[in-house]
Image 1 (cartoon, rainbow, N blue to C red):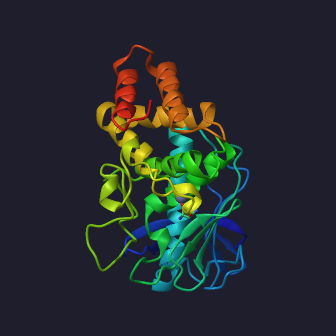
Image 2: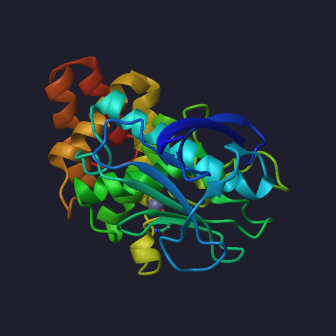
Length: 304
Ligand code: ASN
Ligand code: ZN
């Protein structure tokens, strides 16, 4: 049999069955998806608990990715495909660079590593320590958050500090919601497996996880790049308000247009409000109820 794309299956970290786009070559199957209209592919690798990147291809002998040790690989691969499909189908964006670039993920990074990140070239996921986190690729909203950092880098380029950095974080959380909209929580599927109902962050109630939801409570700090993971609560709450009043379908169009057309590396919260309002005006009219809802959403968090 010749080298070719094929379809396998496996189980994710929640023991959920999923079909997988894989590749067969020389008696071995790879998490290597050639089915998308990209210039590159979607490929998933493993660091084998080390720290060298990009690591080795995740492989399997019979295309049944059913070992528990493969679950992080399975989820990273399947969810990267979902995020690709979302941007393509909803926004006509072909991968993070809009030129079909390869989407690479490496799982099993480090030992007990409680984080995931976009490193400027690829996504990287730890396995967690088993109490603070389980393997971070097990959450679609986390995968969407990280890959949205790549989209932001190639579009608005929001500098990762202070207000522009908090906007960078917020857009990743908001697109995390657009892709995984069953709830307004971030990371609940992988955060503290021993505690039910909690999450990393909440868009609907940022203070529940220590974030401000209004400019009156903005945190002035130099840690965390100027509070990028805390002050993101303010634009997150504005996004929640927006989605509640106009619905997800309009909100995601407005957010994508603001990110890709109007925001710049140094945009602050006030600029983001203006960018979202301009996007709402472009798409739905400047006197529309949609436009007025975006305005009210930002008024409510004290950003003018
Ligand atoms: N998981 C974190 C994030 O995406 C990693 C970081 O701080 N850059 O925000
Ligand atoms: Zn982030």
